[in-house]
Image (cartoon, rainbow over all chains, first blue to last red; front, side, top):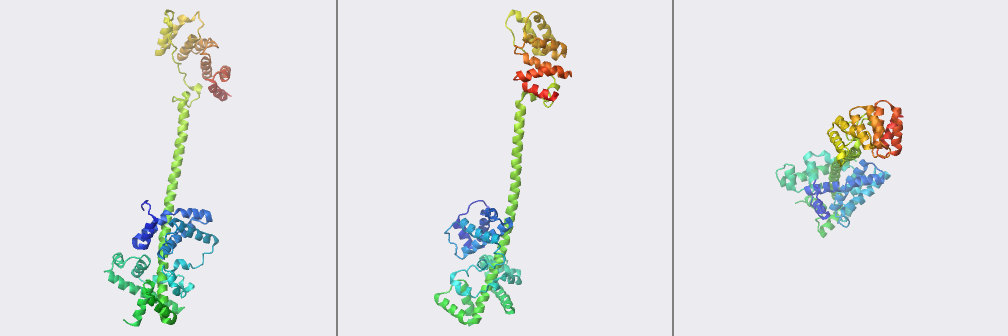
Length: 193
Length: 246
């Protein structure tokens, strides 16, 4: 990665834009503030491995906050990431976070939005835990397609190239099918419970 | 388009935040009153959550791998850094030792690590010329000495030595005899060098070394004691040798 400094405003634009730009911005941020790992480890008396794990979480949380518009550039990115990281370091130190399902982290980026408050009341913490396992019941192509579209924000044209599908329409049709399959697996499991 | 399709579109638009105010009201009413719709929305949300969880998990794995790579690179850089420090430290120590070594004239030649008394004695530099007709023999001796012809120098200088008190002459006759390995003659002339002379301590130094080389430490010791206590130039060397003798 280049040593050239990327301004905060540009990083925000890249994350919101999704696709490869988002991946580049995330990698850049991770490297740029990696020294937090050593600071956090020393200050909170946790291992480097634990601090590194927490740091990865902090970067992911920051990404999600940007996509949810919860971070709008009021503080510098480094300050914002450090505050998330510090709180989580303390959690690790207190061993409180071990078995707690982190709803904030796992919710889709949109659902944190206040306009989804009606939906949020439907979600049951215990059911939310480990939902990603159902994604593994799908084919590799389905899994990659859904992740590329919903998580990384790739366009259907881009996904067609990445997954070597015929055209964007094929992607749209396959996305619908894959999503339906995923919902069926989740519903089936809910019925069994 | 049937009612089910309409509901699907409503749900898609809801998650895409594309609903109009009237559609939001319709959505919320269905959510409150239609159990099937509620389950459908819930399944949509859970499917999106599952994608989000998997994405977070994969991203975290990727970031942790990056972290390990950074750690490894930092470890390598740390090794290089410590090696560089060690190299600088070694160069510094070597430089200090080298400066100490080359700044000490006694350590200049290849025999430097031998004790002083085991080294071959070198001839002192030639004396200055003297400026009168009486001193023709002296100046001839200086010329011979400068050429390394010590016997010729002795021959020239011996014509001068009989009736004079000339410590410089006696010192250089002593020096010539040292070079010719005529030890007794060397002592004879060096003993004559006056205590007030500029050459006195140098003469005592040569004599001490000659005694040590001959294995006569007892004769060397008082000379070295004098040098140790009185000579700025030879004092520390004399002290070192005395410690070795003790």
